[in-house]
Amino acid sequence: MKNVVLIGASGFVGSAILKEALNRGFHVTAVVRNPEKIKIEDENLTVKKADVSSLEEVYEVCKGADAVISAFNPGWSNPNIYKETIEVYLTIIDGVKKAEVERFLMVGGAGSLFIAPGVRLMDSGEVPEAILPGVKALAEFYLDFLKKEKEVDWVFFSPAADMAPGVRTGRYRLGKDDMIVDKVGNSHISVEDYAAAMIDELEKPAHHRERFTIGY
Image 1 (cartoon, helix red, strand yellow):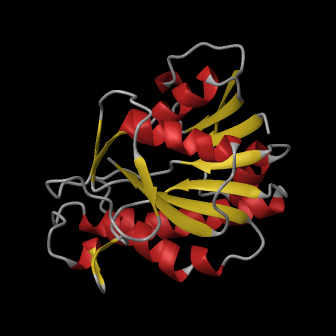
Image 2: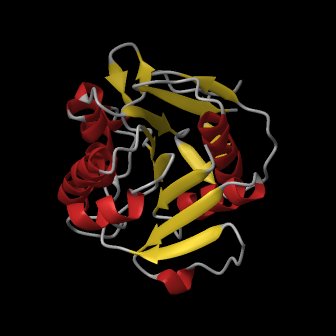
């Protein structure tokens, strides 16, 4: 599995995944809205401009890939983030299927993780109002649509509640549906370690049609 399509490769999470994948020798097709944002030069990197709200454009960039990773985000300040997140991800899934790519890895959100029995993060009152629409969109896409998807071998990889720039330690814990917290109750991960775990899953698939999560 060497040819990977990475949607949203210039964003916060996407750029970390791009760096990790290239460092491990994958050939990456970076799919972005603004190619000039990709500053990396690598013989294994191909940059393609595409509008992933278009089924045909998703199909065209995904053809021939061994796997597709999506870090798509319409932008946290986008007033239509809720609607666009769900609609575009439905299009991405359809495009992946049309291109007959079997493996799909998605940068998920933490909103649908349980922080207590029966209580998801997005319903806890702890998520800032400014980002709640985007948080709920990712969660509801996973719960209402992705979990029902039977054709594609997908994973929805939820980060810890707090994901920030940091260092790549290679030391972290993985879980399923419950938020991972440290000894003092904080849920956090560096974006570099998140990217490392994503590419671990790409190299050696351990999850199939399910969500998993990460934390220290």
